[in-house]
Image 1 (cartoon, rainbow, N blue to C red):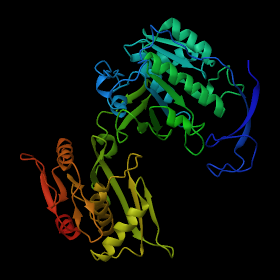
Image 2 (image 1 turned 90 degrees about the vertical axis):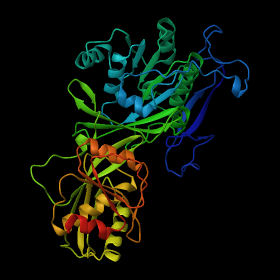
Image 3 (image 1 turned 120 degrees about the vertical axis):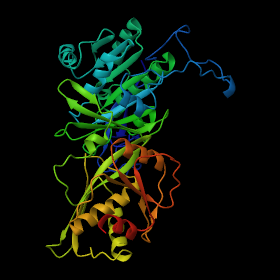
Image 4 (image 1 turned 180 degrees about the vertical axis):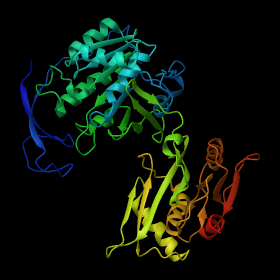
Length: 453
């Protein structure tokens, strides 16, 4: 055993220093540097024999590398498959983060119980009986799922050698510790070392590993930022614990797009996949109300119909208020300026409140036209006719600009029963036969005359 050394690490970014100092030179944060014991030992945490190793032992030309057998593993969860890009890649490391109580453990346990592969679920936070109680609530199936309560990586790898699982799930990475680092579980050096051991195991055995990660009060993954660089995929599980819907986003994905979105509904029996999110994002009303408009947006390859709500009222206080939920506040100010300057609507002395229903945030500029329609509907107190939806970007000169993949947006609107859709006159529409009425507009004034006469 070599000499035990002391090192200083920044708790925010993980930068190492030889002595303590007040401010971190890397992230410029104050009082985040702490002392940790680092034990350098010439041992290998995970070691495989030549017969079990599946990686090449010599450099190969790109054309010589065989990828025919690199088939993604189906997780039996369509939403997770979509976010991952088609399924789990063998040998990949996936990190799932989210608020406490949002449903991270429920999601991965539910997947582990339903997988047709031999799954090894390791929990450092719950006992086997506690996990059994949750598993009985989710499903009666679980013939291929092994449960282990352990926090030491050496013991975990010993059990993995005996079971030889197809998929490994760790709940959570912050609870693991290794004998080769003399610091408490959850510290920067422990998280980094345990993750490095899991990466070595995953790459050498071609076994996908799913990690659950805690987050800080700022919403970032707890531990060093290098943790997110080490893994292949970073997923974020979002939602309000007071609501039943959860959103799964991809923040990083080496094997697919980061624009995909998965939606779940939290139920007593676990998480239910929401196949048609447009149904939950559009509210059902008994009567027509002013200030609401339906927009078509895209999340990755998935088209969504979302409801935009606007409230325009006379400013009671001196300065008019501009408030948004789920929409860029600066873009709202730009649209209001365009309506004031180009279209002649006097909104400078009025309060404007904008809300995207369903609790999601939308960055797609194609919802600009629906935002304009909702604001004008509330300002004039005239409800937009049922069956109307919008897809268009608003320019600074008041023109309606074309948006991408307009055919897919039109087909989604038609599938959900909408009768008319407003799109830019300059959009190239390839659809030949469609039952929905396509209204072409080039300026805001054209849309206003069509809607309000």
